[in-house]
Image 1 (cartoon, rainbow, N blue to C red):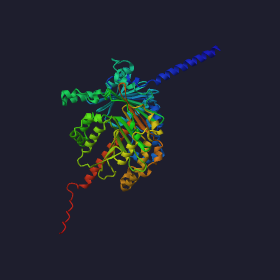
Image 2: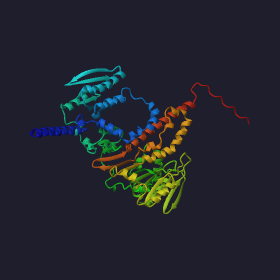
Image 3: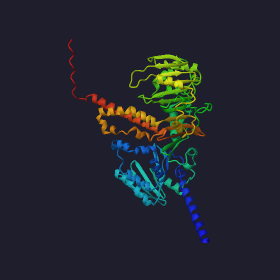
Image 4: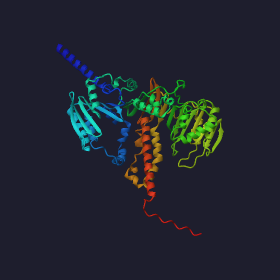
Length: 597
């Protein structure tokens, strides 16, 4: 009996010890990385567990959409135009997965003379020989593509450093089991090894002791898949120096927004098929403390069951009148408005007195319409001053002809635009409670009728309610996109146009087969709403977003697509210009004879 009790005690002690070690290893997050990096580190990206993130990604809605057979069939031709860098294909990724890499990090430690110093590394399972079988292949591929590279081995303390120099690039790597480290500067790598081994001369001068870094990670979720941290003070200092050189001393005393930012950080986690993003910007509050209550989202009642986009944000247009008039790219139209307001004696104080701060925006897309309708709204505080501002705005463009009407105490202003692919009739409605701006008089009038309702088809819909509960209550910004509804309408409107374009542009078929475009049902079953909210919390702004892709990712994607489209149009215009103009020295066509009178 005593032996049994002793055996049970030993097993229990071993289990407790094993649990403690396992739990300790699970807690090895970015703290074990931040103690390896210098305090002045500019940028850090950190992934706690590579394999866990990979598994979560494969359970996400967007990955399941990508793996749909119809989608794979459609992407076969476009993806064939892109080649994976040799040596970094699926096989290499699979080998890296076998190392069970944890605490994978990449950092920009300093920026001297516009030359960034980079450092990175990860913890691996198994022996150094296991890790070298994977990393050695990367090194060999690099040497193959750079035949002039010089490789040598150096000894530092009890470490062997592998140095590869290919002017102007240098890569130094070393093992400090269970770590693998790499850096573009030999001194930087030695610093990593010193901090990892406890030999650093200033052990407290690490990123872990930086106040801005600690403020950033205090807002980070505990179970994140990817985290980044940016310290902008280096760029802010350079901006301040540049401003001092080109501006007056009085102007340089006013800090720019970048100079007020203490840190920028973000974290991504994957859960239940959705992507969760959190972005934190450490800085003083920009709004005055007397801005009033948080967002009321009162414009929700203007939505319908066909609403796929909703936005509400605090925006003091009165304080930004001068900034907008000087904004690059908007100078033409905004300066006309600014001049019209100036001629009418309208000041920023008039704006503040006339309108509230909560700007709303909604987009509806009925199934019977080819294109969506967009509305902008502002609460009205003083209808007389608001009317004066609207009247001045309609006089900004001398060539525009506005018609005026009044119905049920609401004033309507409409302007007929020139004929285009999409019929646009800019319309403004002004009541004693709300200003509504849209591109369709019917949609504007219907929105005014819905104003003041206690509820609406949109705000009461289960789809909206369940999505809005995924993010904290906003105080500054809120956005909602019904991606399922949006894609359904886009498919119905654009699919016929794309198929027609393919018939008239045979060269398009070399890049994509539009006949294999997936059915909308295959796409929409993996889509859910995107929702985003922003608030000010303690020491900075916190923005959270949830969806199959997040709000920030969708904005970045749109920016990339816009840039790609602009480049394609520029290339097409250049080609057409070259085709229409005969090369120099080529025979010129003879002029046609003049007709005989």
